[in-house]
Amino acid sequence: MQRDLAEISDGKIYGWNDMVRVSCNDCAGCSSCCRDMADTVKVDPYDAFFLTKGLEKEFETLLSKEIALGVEEGMILPHLKTDGACVFLNQEGRCKIHAFRPGICRLFPLGRIYEDGKVSYILQTGECEKQNCSKVKVGKWLNIPDRTRYEAFAMAWYRLRKEAQAVIAAQQDEELVKTLNMFLLHNFYLKPYDMQADFYSQFEKRLEQAYRILRA
Ligand code: SF4
Ligand code: SF4
Image 1 (cartoon, rainbow, N blue to C red):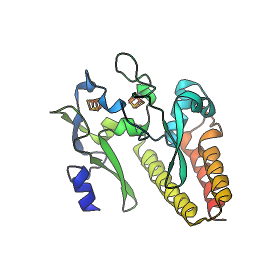
Image 2: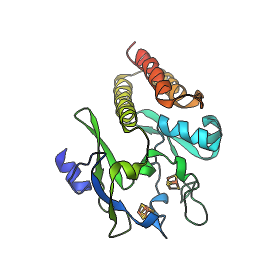
Image 3: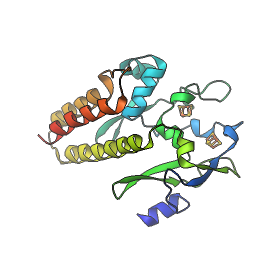
């Protein structure tokens, strides 16, 4: 694992309060990472909650233009649509949904790793076009409130995905795989969240339901 990390990063592992060299003058004049991103900007349930809230649209409606479905290790997962450029990039090369952009966009060029039961961060080398970025705290860069709950969510979502992918990999019956995928998609994305209520407690209930099905 360390060798793999060394190949794609500066070899260091960062925590929320560590300083990291990523702050690039507000990306002035650059929108490189919002172009040709293929299916890499995955949308997790936290992103889905804030995208639907910010855009005032149900997730199902976003599936027609803004979000597509892909498959990662057998599990259906949504990602932002791109047509040469992200659907949310405006004519001036700025993000139209900056305040509620997905976690992967908030992180970039950081990446997230899940080791020893906790979430940490790496600096992916050669990803950001700009040179001489200045240092900023990881937490400030992400600008997501309530670090403890957010990182607990990120870890829980990672574990759920891994367990679902393992169940899918072991399942021979394609119809059952399809049914399981449809349940997960509905449970975490299509079933509307209560926008007036706390995201995390709603996610936790949906997580319990998912584990009940996965472990049945
Ligand atoms: S959502 Fe915004 S920051 Fe993320 S890829 Fe699209 S335009 Fe870029
Ligand atoms: S490549 Fe770097 S500077 Fe350019 S838009 Fe992305 S984060 Fe900003």
